[in-house]
Length: 166
Image (cartoon, rainbow, N blue to C red; front, side, top):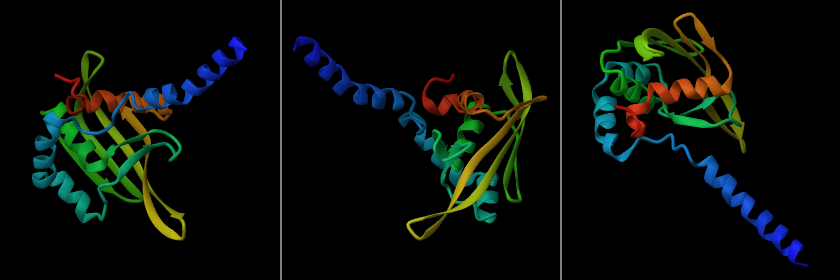
């Protein structure tokens, strides 16, 4: 009976621990950076270009919608710029959009970075939605297409907005 009670308590606690672990990393902008991100989103030529291309400020997914959701696209660009203030960011549109950054600090050096985000239309409950999917990140000559490496790259590029950057 004691063994059954122990297993019941253990099994009951698993979902809560899993949910806690899933929320361990928050892709939102930290409170102390929200004003800077909002200012960037209002004044940036890059964000203005995205608005001109008709890109909504939606969340970006890594590879597929069943993987982790990243921050919203405008916030993502703001956080890249705020984490890497000397970086020059350009956006091109076409079947999604490409983000080119001339120099980001990675692995004891500065590297050019290209990010490919595709926009896919999906239908949920008879409503059509556009979903932004992070397809690949190119750092120098390395191309990352797997979920873990792309997620880690985004964490590094946006570190200042999450409160763990310098």
